[in-house]
Amino acid sequence: LTIAACHILVGSGYWKESDALEVGGCVVIGLFSGLLIGFATEYCTSFEYEPVKSIANAGRHGHAPVIIQGMGVGMLSTVVPVIVVIIAILSCTALSGLYGVGIAGVGMLSTLGITLATDAYGPVADNAGGIAEMAELEPHVRENTDALDALGNTTAATGKGFAIGSAVLTAVALMASFIYTSQIGNSGIDIMDDVVIPGVLIGAMLPFVFAALTMLSVRSGAHDIMDEVKAQFAKRAENMDTWVPDHERCVAIATKSAIGEMLLPGALAVLVPVSVGFALGAKALAGLLVGSISSGFLLAVTMANAGGAWDNAKKYVEAGSIPGHPKKSDLHKATVTGDTVGDPFKDTSGPSLNILIKLMSVVSLVFAPVFPSKPYEDLVVGLILLAVLLLLVIIGITMKSKKAHSYSKLDEVEMS
Image 1 (cartoon, rainbow, N blue to C red):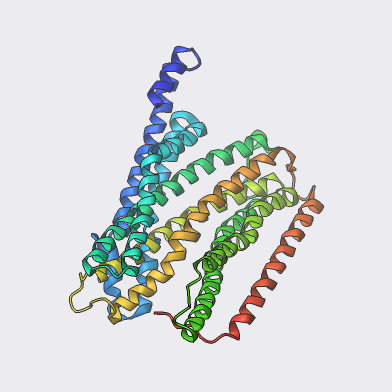
Image 2 (cartoon, rainbow, N blue to C red):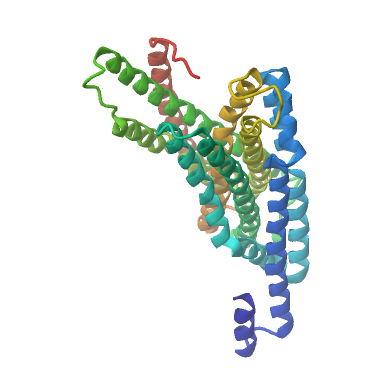
């Protein structure tokens, strides 16, 4: 498609042949960058390689070493994606400027069909294993679905690597558009400007706050479902003959929690860039975008890869790969703890950071013409927006404290 599009544009006289070659080169760079990130992700999350094996073996010494080893693997897994993205940005900028960086993001997503298919593969295999266990099928059926699920964890992590890589490239291009669209213009940004570094720090903070809110939301929703299941089992004990499980109730709780808990993170992603843009000016907002892209990229890769590695470390033990440590052993229980921590990492907080980065970039670009070039010119507007955000935070904290108070009245829920 790229070759056909370049041929049409050259034939119509819109581009020169050199322009077509440069843009085509950016697409190829983006494609190969995605493949390299995918290979690095596979190495860090597949139990065929040493990183996942090291997490599983760390379970010999208890639960905490599994968490420590997994976090270390996740953090180290950022090295290759960062180097690849740096090379891609520099190469594409040399070929076709910042437009080339955006085109590289398109190239990285040119394998979107296969990426979506492999991403969907994991949940299908996981659900097949759950059905096999609930139907009490033969043990070898569950073993086969576990092997498929382990592969699905790796393919899902690979797809997330493609997504965050393309999100960074897209956000860089959007940030450049924001700078040229705003009142900053060609004057540029001085890093020693008194509002730029504060903007960078605010932006670097946002992905951590956003990830924390989403993880706490998972905990809150899980508690609600656990309480409901406990209540249903209490009714089951009273009358075994007529008791029927209410699955729809659990689904409704999960759905309500998912929607309600996203209000505060969503408001954070929209209101903070706009309030900073009005209160501190366009230069501070440019710094915010730099900080959020940098920390969001690293945090998303860390969470996605650490979560996938923890999950596959558990699968590695369940496959009997460590002699003397079967399923339900102490080592297996330690890896289950790692998998429990990894689930919100790889399935909630990590992928959501892609949305945060792109959403803040788009919001900033939309409002770019109205942000003042100098700080404090529209300070009142910025403070009003911050007050609205603070009100939402107070409401959210109040609701969570009420839930926490209700949990303290409940008996402890045992988890296996």
